[in-house]
Length: 127
Image (cartoon, rainbow, N blue to C red; front, top):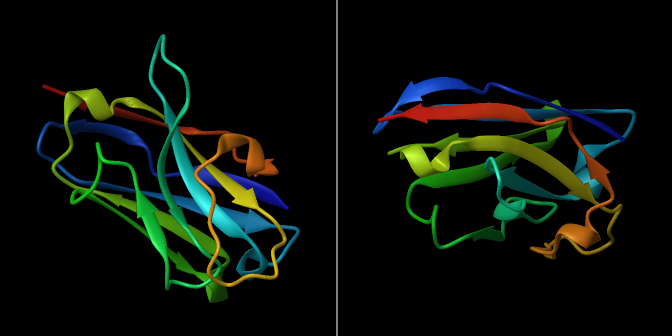
């Protein structure tokens, strides 16, 4: 499966942005999905994850309450809605697919469990 992330850009602190991840060459509903980010000079870190269906989600503490991950399996797309953005949210955001998986409720927060990665989209939050 190929993943294409989009929707990044420049936003002021306190603003909102939605990034999307469109899949091709496979059925996204077969995969658990995750969003990761990598800030300049830092390691890549988990942001959020979602199981095959919209039942179970995970959020890292540093985005909990501000970010929402969702998926539209009919559109083969996963979203990350980001609100109350902070300058420290500035990073390249990557979507990733884990699977295909039989479980509809499993998700991973471990980078090494993800098999497919998008190219990343840059989000810059100005102060």
